[in-house]
Image (cartoon, rainbow, N blue to C red):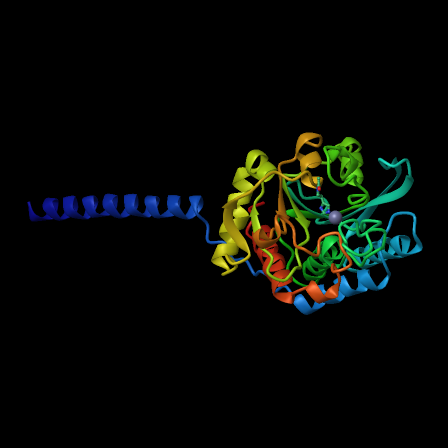
Length: 323
Ligand code: AHN
Ligand code: ZN
């Protein structure tokens, strides 16, 4: 009898052990521990790339500086091991000027099916149209143009340097964003590069996209921009949560703001890729900073801490993305 009872107890214990093991394993399958090494974004390096763009001179379409600055982006992407595609096209601006433009894409892990698209514009506005003293003058566009280029090129360097993320990454540099008609409702006069790209992207697909526009300014705040909220709410939540985890809530503020026609609008509506906009917002100055589209948009307003907050957040987001 004791033997039988023994057997029963051993049997029951085995069943309990077996079941608890099963449960354990199930958990492990559902929630694997991801060993992700996220590289450290180097703000000095990003700042150097911003300066490098500015040093070419204003990157006004059809100018020599514009061509040279675009060539430099291509050269750096290739040096960091990206496969580069250049989309050359002509667009007519609202004032009738015919612009020779180039969208530049650098792809990492090009065979990966799941892809994240990171974008910015690289051209600068031809005139400092909001400059109180000289609204015809060209200007550096250190923040409005070069800052996004600096962040994306530093991300490219980091992708090349260490263990790459499991997803594919595409870095897209839009041309012809800033030759738009200021004031009034001619919104489609802006963002000529992204409009062209969205209409001619072929079979390109991405899981989602993140646009950078003016991401190097002192006192930058990035709000929940209107179209981003409407068209890619979950991406907005993902990025702002990651920024908060890294201690960057000072920059990535959880605050609803108005909708801005920017490159992401056309990626959302024409290319049908959900894309958010990380966009400079300065409540003390209306929406954009007082430097916006003035000669004050030069290296003096660029802050490495802002570049770091944006770049490190993006690296974390893409490295933690499941394949
Ligand atoms: C409009 O003003 C309609 N969109 C702003 C896009 C822009 C210009 N971003 C930087 N410069
Ligand atoms: Zn602009």
